[in-house]
Amino acid sequence: MPIIEGPGPDALAKRSRQELCVLGREYLLIGHLQDRVGLPLATQLVGEAAQVQLSIDEWMGASPIYSLRMQEALGFSGSDVGTVFKNLQVEIGAPPQFMDFQFRLDRPDYGEFWLAHCGALLDVEPFGEKRVKTMCWDIEDPTFDATAAATHPCMKMRPIHRPPRTDGEDGNGVGKWPHCRWTVFIDDEGTPYEQHPNLPRMRETLLADVPIELPATDAEPGGWSDYGGDFDPGFQLEDLSHRALMAVCQEVAVQAHLLGRSLILNIDQRHGKDDAMALGRGLAIGAAAVGAYRLKRALELGDDAAALVEIFRVHPHFMPRTYVDVRAELVADDVARIEMHDCPALQEADEHSWFACLEEETPPSIQAIATMVNPRARVRPADRRGACYAWEIAIDPAAAPAKEPKEMQIARISRGVDFELMQRRPLRA
Image 1 (cartoon, rainbow, N blue to C red):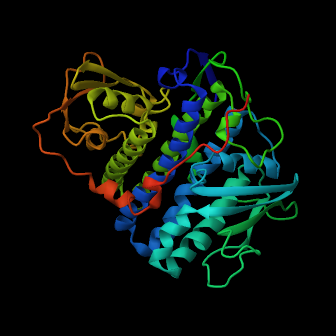
Image 2: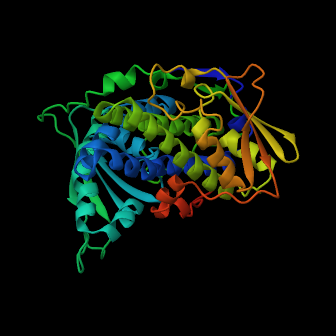
Image 3: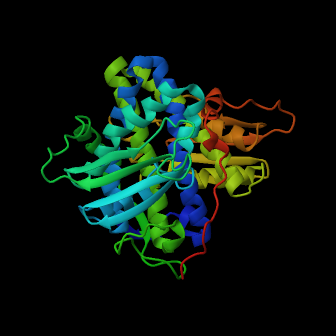
């Protein structure tokens, strides 16, 4: 995964370190929440009995690829437990605060982590103990090992304590907390982990090797240029330099694309192209809507056409620009223009992405973003003028407010949609 040295994508390069930290945390949680849309939609196709294996296959087909990409982007490649912990600190499966991972590294081949707060657990507990065990046992066991094995084939993750919680349970001596605790260790005498058979196919995609674009130098001083030093259990995005934060934001977007692609691929293998396309369409709508909703709030934007332009410029749906060439501009006080130009996202030789539905006259994912910014915004096709696709989004004060898409309502089952992220410490000098 090469890094292109250049001016950097304007949407990120013009942001301050402080703003990039906000965007980075939002991208991690938005990427995590796309599964709150994708898995319920996929379960409607495969049924409850197949849901567990589908979830396992989805994560195993993506996390080994994006774990190695993040290691390269932040310069911390290695084969020890500290490397795995660094990956978990910048991974959409463990968005900070919502999934509040805490770490203790005892030595290079052994460490522990625990969750002081697990938003995913709180989401499923109301549905009963069976659902808790499905997530915290059946799905986590193989997917945790797959992530660890991307760093070392004999790396293992094993639980010390995990849900379901019971009244009076001490949770390692702290009441009902932590929600779970795990050991991570290298078992040199164990059998090397066998990765998922979909990985070779996933690695053949343009997405798997897409480069990210970074400026040659930092736009402002301060922070680590990479994460190549010692593992820091208290790591925050505020520790990183401007350039490194740009790398994280782009790589987190790649993580979300890979995870979505893996889910759609698995539906194609089980049910065929038509169902895969239908899932991709629904996933695109939900991910687009959740991202727009959270970013509008995080960036304290209004509901005018200028806000629409800003959302399209920073939405992780359209990152990194080396993969998704989307351009947004304000053409009138109440009209925004969105263009999508030829790019790798449109050149993948399959239908396993949320870009496969753009042939619709008014793509529902584009309308979903517009609706979440202003329910009176309407998308219409525009003169392409050399672009592959082009739309105008006009805000009509006389229009009836559109309802949130049903995929957004599915996502709202999770507390993560409205979860308040915060800055926990100042920027590193």
